Length: 202
Image (tube, rainbow, N blue to C red; front, side, top):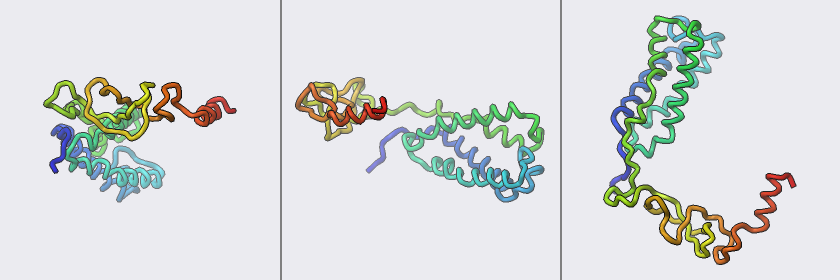
């Protein structure tokens, strides 16, 4: 069966490739030779054990950037894009705040600086999360529950449907109704007691 979803835009796939190259360079320098960071890294990391820990981080995070290069759909990788952008921004700010500590002008520093100066181009990714592009009234998938008593909260079994701005009649997004035949009952007394215990302490 042909996979559905939004293709990954080429700028984002290229960003992953560049980051993998930067990461490979970091692994070859700091992970394999933590004692030589004065010459091979963006700054002289001391003590050596700290350099080794940083190198281990690069090794462990390699798959995070390597695997998305081979992903077929945007939906498979979108969960990591904003955290990656936030991390890159934080590292760039830390670099600028402590610029004097770095080995300025050296190739390792240039690679380090560019790797965090280059944020993921997630804005260039197609915004095609449309679950039915042939019908303008349908836009996204939603998990819905039948609401038999019209209380605004439904109960299992759940359904995953392609919907527009609002769910179809008789279906709602909440599925925790304890008695879906009585609109005056949504949560059991046991649930209310547990909620009071958590919020009020008794």
